[in-house]
Image (tube, rainbow, N blue to C red):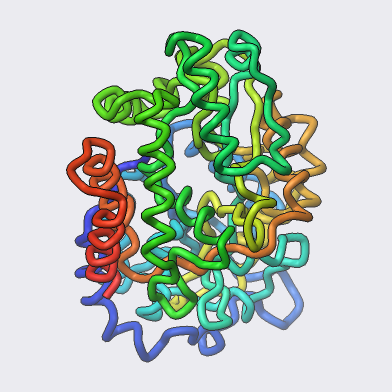
Length: 436
């Protein structure tokens, strides 16, 4: 889990709200930067903000160089920082009336900015989204306005170690049909047959996307489109009960070991260290886990996809590209977003850095340049395309606090300080307060 940005972002955006309310979505009033008369276009300067590592900064600069070569009249000023500082810096810029023309957004904060009129509706700009899956586009849509276009996609899935299965004499499951009960039974069997030298599974309860899938399988949801909670507390209690069943049977480690492993991140997970057969991670984390394990791993659908009312898995945007509603150069900002999404030259440079390309044609065109693990993830996502029904609703304002709430309450459940039913009630109360 990445560190959560400071909650100062809400206060900073509130300062900006009055200045932005009148101009939300007012890109039609912005002056056209490209003249209609003959001759070369007038020079235009726009700013693009993002977060990430030094590697991402270097790759992004290469893409901007290619963009400027294609559009010589446009200069893109890079505005980047690390994740910890990003939303503080962006909130300060917005509050001061100096929002970047193109900005990177994260799903838990997209609604925060959109609801205050900071972001333009990309549907009103000249950005081609025809090669992006409709469910992926929905993930950035609020009240029929597209406030963010996914840079790339991941899926929450199970990373499994075939070597661990083989050592225990247990067959890999048919992940198109296996149930939650079978998931528990398989994990228990692996732990028992290896004398817990290899645990069958790593606890899944620290991350709310796992529950989101569980609820969606049952026709419910973590959040509804109107920004409320959409699950029955009995469903949430059942999700935690499976985890407790695994812990009590030895299918996963005890609470103290589980908390220690979770704190170590993907590279210190049970699968990565050769002490576990299954763990829940995003598909873009497969490379790091594979490298740490030194083994060839495999991706599996989560259990229960054919068991209940519908499938629950979904494509998650790695992040979003958004355009400022106050940009003085919306045409040029849209050109940059279009280039980032749809130009194969950009795709060949970025590859999987911002998730596997959301544009499926670009993804196919650059796939041969992917690493072996990225190819594996791309094939897995392609196999899921016909099974995914839709995407979850955009998280409501305040959802940035839910990751911390989930982690804390899950720990209380594992240590026996809260029953699953009591944990479900407390989770609901705290999340409703956060998003209220």
